[in-house]
Amino acid sequence: MTHIKVNVDGTPYEDEVEPRLLLAHYLRDRLGLTGTPIGCDTSNCGACTVELDGTTVKSCSVLAVQADGSTVTTVQGLAKDGEWTALQHAFHERHGLQCGYCTPGMIMAARDLLRENPHPTSDEVREALEGNLCRCTGYQNIVRAVLAAAGQQDGPGRQDASGRQVGEEVTA
Amino acid sequence: MIPPAFEYARPASVDEAVRALADAGEEAKVLAGGQSLLPLLRLRLAFPELVVDVGRIPELRGVREDGEALAIGALTTHHDVIHDPLVRRYAGLLAGATATVADPAVRHRGTLGGSLAHADPAGDLPAVALALDAELVAVGPAGRRTIPAREFFLDYLQSALSPDELLVEVRIPKTEGWGFHYEKFQRVAQAWAIVGVAALVRRADGHIAEARIGLTNMGSTPVRATAAERALAGADGPEAVARAAEAAAEGTRPSQDLSASPEYREHLARVLTRRAVLTAGGMG
Ligand SMILES: Cc1cc2nc3c(=O)[nH]c(=O)nc-3n(C[C@H](O)[C@H](O)[C@H](O)COP(=O)(O)OP(=O)(O)OC[C@H]3O[C@@H](n4cnc5c(N)ncnc54)[C@H](O)[C@@H]3O)c2cc1C
Ligand code: FES
Ligand code: FES
Image (tube, rainbow over all chains, first blue to last red):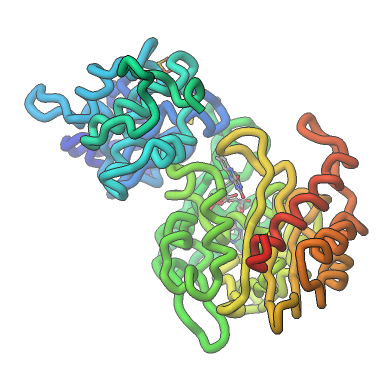
């Protein structure tokens, strides 16, 4: 057993953990923070994405002992006093989710992008989300939600003659 | 899945790390960014008794100029390599190729040293290190030694490091003024390369004076396309480059897997070498 101290979503924790315990399991099973889901066993899907000392990591690919002394932010720590962030609102308003399984990871990855690049193009949004898989939406509304949160419109060429929004693949 | 149980050590210095590795013998594994090792542990493809986490040794991180070379700490993350001004200026090929590795979250954790020590021929950075004529500096119980990239990759997932050695630094001769490009062919975004080509081109008087080509996933180790390199010397335009690129797969032994047959990989090596050299040479 190894002793760790971690601050998660503003709350300090101290625990004895087995070295093999994954951060994702620590968050979910020990701290009860089930807002961070696990979607795969291959580090591919990004559903488990959280921030570790301010940058995104896949929490299934970090040991809890590696987070010793660090600050972790999960999707559950974003809202302040029950007030959602702009990104959370945008995912809601732009219908950026269906089943919602990928959403915590999408939101964390999008936060990371907007920190480094506050005004991304839609291609930059797609590249930033390349490590996050969504089985439901086809990604269009996720990209729209991120652009909306960044205060951007969907960009030129994405509306048909009547002003209706259409997918890029359709117009391309 | 849950990894098998192991003991955990987090040394604060290189000396301490090497001692821990030497004491544990064959049963220890170094943990750097964990982006290859943790998936292996989760799939129960590795069973170390001791994991030595070198992630908190500050001297292993960062980039500095050292005469005609850059010295990059083995624990420098992919993210930091991509954004480092020295790397961008003197080793643009490495910055460009690293940006194609995995995805942003993996690049925040994964390290240059870990990518090379892992010696996966499908990894992008081994072929890049080979094309850059990099040198790898290792520290073990017997002291420090420098291994040229050409002698570092021995076989599939097997490097020249012994189990009690730690890779501490990657030295890259400056290639300021050379054109460069990494051409990666992948099935979907964030996927590993089916084949990748790292090209460095030095031009003089309107022709290619010298070219260096590293191939990703064209055998059990990364390889240099030496026949194509020879044929490229003197090439003065797109047709000459295309002819020289026909030699790109000579001497390679690519594998068969779900994504590609050996013949298809050889075809890709030729096509991607042409594209990479044309882009690197500003001839595309
Ligand atoms: C979803 C996903 C996609 C990926 N896609 C790509 C890709 O497209 N291209 C690509 O090149 N890579 C890819 N990777 C791998 C990624 O680049 C890893 O970061 C890298 O291969 C290993 O670096 P690490 O620091 O995480 O090493 P670790 O996982 O910590 O270690 C890997 C191996 O190297 C050894 N090791 C590490 N550091 C040292 C050292 N300093 N001295 C001695 N031994 C050491 C370890 O013992 C272990 O055997 C991907 C990974 C994931 C999870
Ligand atoms: S659960 Fe972590 S990447 Fe899929
Ligand atoms: S909304 Fe279902 S996986 Fe993305």
